[in-house]
Amino acid sequence: MLLQPKRTKYRKYRKGVLPKLEHRANKLEFGVFGLKATESGCISANQIEAARQAITRKIQRKGRVWVRIFPNLPITSKPIEVRMGKGKGSVSHWVARVGGGAMLFEIEGIPEKLAKSALKIGAAKLPVKTVIIS
Image (cartoon, rainbow, N blue to C red; front, side):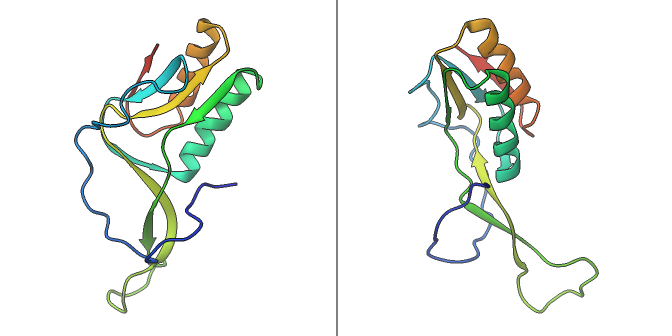
């Protein structure tokens, strides 16, 4: 199941600008090991889900995994080969805006070596550069 908000105030939003640095969600809060973004970017709901599945598969569903980001920004696109104009396109997917330093995933309850290898596999699914924090 893909992540997306149950309901929003408006159907379509402007993309806005990416935060340069994350000042709030930049420390470990729940787990012992974490995956932290070192650059800002947009991560789609598909990419978040792929990384989460890869991490949980690697740790064989032992321990606990927290996903610290949520895709709440709708990205619209018009169909291919449609002329310009006629309004904004329909919502194609949802993304999470991520600033540099934002904590993406956290893990606890497994050995350090396994946690780091799981987070490394999860990081390969994401479009932003990351670092593993303990």
